[in-house]
Amino acid sequence: MNRKNSVRLQPRMVTFMVLGALTSTLAQATPLDDMVALDATYIPALAQTTAASQDAAAVPRARAALAALQAQWPGLQQRLNMTWGPQAPKDWHQALAQAGQHIQAAAAAAAQANWKQAHDALEPIRTDLMAVRRAQGMDYFVDSLTAFHEPMEALALAATSTPAASLSERQRAEMAQNFAHARALWAQVERQRIDTASYGLSAARAAQLKQALADETLALARLSDALRGGDNAQLLQAAAAIKGPFARAFIAFGQAPGETPR
Image 1: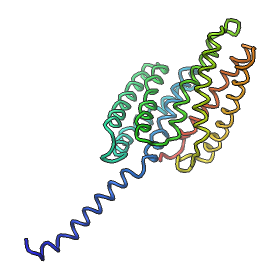
Image 2: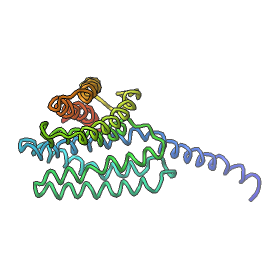
Image 3: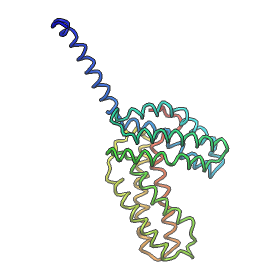
Image 4: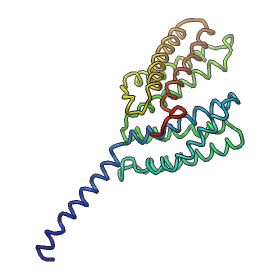
């Protein structure tokens, strides 16, 4: 190759290099957008399948939410597979493949009107993806809520499954241990600052989130007081009361009916 031809090819090579770098940058620049887009459709399906398992009136909403998740999943999976570009860990692609299987299992359960099973099929998606996001060092607000869910749920379950008259000292000690865990995780939620616009929250959902976070902090304070007291009925009532605000905070990250997908 002579010098003239070599010089002529250099701009083309530079162009390819720039485009390649730009493509890589774009693939890695918006992981938050990718996660928000998934949760916008996943969270309504998760919430409405729970509602349908408890109230037949919620079944149409559950079917619609699950159908929306199924319809959007192929595009979401393709988009999410590009998150972090070629640097995405193998575990991320595996978690996404498993998420697709969970969605299929939920749809199969819904077809049999088994809404509890449909909800249970969807549950692992958020914990599986949380594990990879955190391993990647991603600070994602919804993951902090997901981490809080486990000890919160243990407390709420104790409140609804144990009569006050038969609550033992051992059970109170277990509740105190779960509370300490939950309160420490909630402190992490409180320390995070969230840009509601970046998370795609409408004004109504942003207001819902703000109020729910404040309500959860108050509910945990009341539970702390009840744990130090001797009234078992008051303790169980306070434990049950921490679930509602959490649910409202989490659901705020799902799109409301009629919202345009991000």
